Image (tube, rainbow, N blue to C red):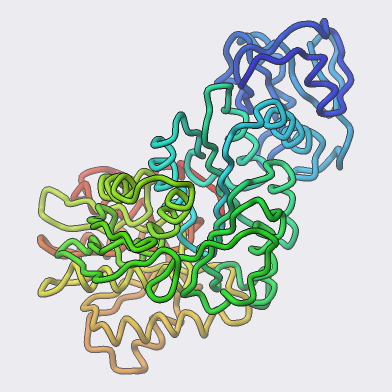
Length: 481
């Protein structure tokens, strides 16, 4: 962040200054964790589900914070008191979260030359964000989110890392309800927006595909005629995605940015010819899975349209490696067990892509899927899980370990359809670990995948360590949709 006085900050967020001189400057960073505070920082107290940041204001000041942004006043603490919002809320409508967004927006107004790129979609957001971050370095210093910082708390934190050296800002935008992305766009005002795909993720929340489309399209409806919308020509909703911005399309046929002559190596890494305005350049991805072609096309389209030479773009794409954990993360144990750890999240589209990758990598080997529930699919949850079971059957995956009641329709379907492979149901993670240890052998190829809260990363970690560690006490290290 650039240095700002408390007077500037208080004006931008609508705060009252208490117990501190308004002329003092924030010369460090903005922190939500009191333990991460150092001299010159600003602490923002957010009331969460498990802890209330207001309880740690004293610690933040002791650690060097110039002041704390709070929604209730404290005696003898340097503070900026905000009241716009629901004071007792633990959600993003609480005053300090609203203040966080206002401060991020104000900072961007002081840094008007930053190119702001926003990405959303039902799947692939985080991987594409990482590709965009690598490509951004072709232009200059680039800021991008850590993990999936894609909501009203995470996105402003990313913005507030910018300073006067920043040239490119990458933003990931997720949604839990209609209007979420619109609020994020109000904070960041992107210049270029990407919609990767419109799928069934969160179908239980949004109820219909039209609502999913409407919500994701908020990222392009905020754009004006001087901005750019990067859209997937292969997506069935492409013609329904309306925007005032100039459209740049990506896809396999008839798009502005195309991939042709696609092939996969033994590790399911794609090679293809990238085509743009009559020029062709070879891409050899290190990322795993055929679906990464679409993600890389989206990222390429942004920078090709900006005028970056195609050979520079393909070189970066070919050298880019996976940076966000538990997303098609491939590791090999000392017993030569290949683990495809895609346990960060799951929806029908990403599950199908992962299964196809398992089949490809595991050709002529013993294939094993450990699958937990795909959450938030609403009334169609059983149908979507049975569709996955059909694909498992079709691909002839040899072993299935199905975890938890939510995923049991997969188990039931395979049993009823006379599945030729080995199939076991486990009620919980402890049973899953025990069954995995007994069933998986050297040289097997294993896919581990479920929605985030199922916690299957514990199982993936156990397999990679050849079950040498007691993993029952491992805590989830990352949360978020």
